[in-house]
Image (cartoon, rainbow, N blue to C red; front, top):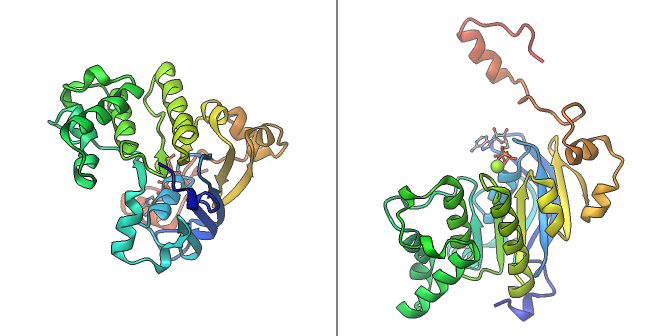
Length: 280
Ligand SMILES: Nc1ncnc2c1ncn2[C@@H]1O[C@H](COP(=O)(O)OP(=O)(O)OP(=O)(O)O)[C@@H](O)[C@H]1O
Ligand SMILES: [Mg+2]
């Protein structure tokens, strides 16, 4: 259940954050905040840095500038033990949300409950079946993960991410591989968890129509920066060419399709005896 004392502060806050893997940041000046009961969508093209932002939010990747806070605590001042405690209040659906293969759907979803709670068997079974019911897979509980489809596995991972009733949930591409009906169910599940349990949800996706239906706030990233932020209606009304192209899904415009050329690529190509002629 949501912590009433936490309701005044965001569950997740980025303040002017820079993130990257090498010496130079990949993302600059990113600010966003997700409060209890809110669904905030992070939109951006492939390779724009959405998963990188998720890694910043879980403390896997330290910011190169700015501040990341979870439940009001600046992650820069948090030790490993405290980080583990904070992560227990957080659910994460990873983009490559691997399930344990050769185990059943039930055992996969029950795993976080066995790790972090002392629930009795009857209560644990009930909780797992409830979460599976919410994603339409209660009657698949007995199947091995090798026996289910890719989209079903995605829904099992979604059930697992929320089984501990987290106060903050980060969903990285929850709609990937889902058919339109399952996508609608997943979107409603995300909205309902925020409405009913008061959890804060950060939804990472490229799916504009589905995410706009359930979001309170949208942040669009591109070219290393925050390109736009506002309510879905504000973004729909935007005349900015970058925002327009993203929302309309137009093939031509300022949103880059090609991965940027680099010296590392040039060196690799030269070793293979190639040349850069004709590179975009
Ligand atoms: N571990 C890593 N080390 C170095 N560079 C990385 C690493 N992970 C990602 N990158 C680079 O960072 C950039 C952003 O990657 P990221 O995974 O955050 O994109 P994304 O927006 O999640 O894309 P997608 O929608 O395809 O999942 C890419 O250029 C990628 O090559
Ligand atoms: Mg990603």
